[in-house]
Image 1 (cartoon, rainbow, N blue to C red):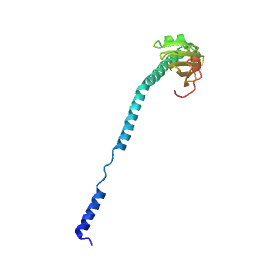
Image 2 (cartoon, rainbow, N blue to C red):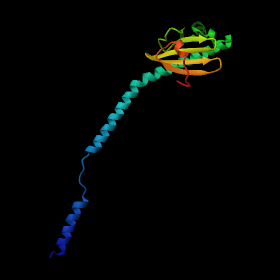
Image 3 (cartoon, helix red, strand yellow):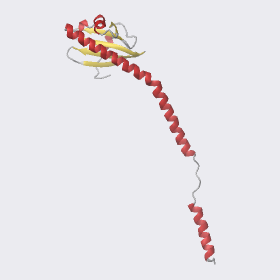
Image 4 (cartoon, rainbow, N blue to C red):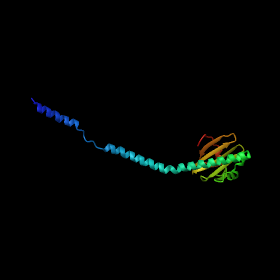
Length: 163
C-alpha cells in the first residue's frame, strides 16, 4: 500500500501535467494577420487606381450642370429650347465648348447639344466609351442617362431620374 507522501507526490505530478498549458505555435495568427495586411494593401491600390475615374465622372456631371443652366437661360430669354443650339449655348456659357447634336463629345469640357422646340439634350464624354446625358423639357422635366454614343441626339433618349 502507498503511503500519504507517495499519493500526494503522484497527485502533484498529475496536477502539474494538466495545469501547465502547452506552448502553442503562432502560425494561425500570422496567417490571419498576413491575409488581412495583403487585403488592405490590395484595397488601397484599388482606391488609388480608380480615383481618376471618379474625378472624370464628377467633371462631366459638372459640365452638364453648367450647360443646363445655359440652356435654361436661353429658353427663358427666347421662349424655346430651339435657340439653345451649339451657337446659342456658346454665347450663354462660354466656359465650355459646344458642338452640334450629330457630332460626338470628345472630352470633359465639350458638350454635344441637340435641340427641339420643347426639348434640349446634352452629352459629355467622361472617358472613352462612357458618356453622360442630360435632357430638359419645356414641361420642367429633367432626365439623366448614360451610354457609349456621345452625341446630343443620343442624349434625347435620356429618361432616368438620376445618373
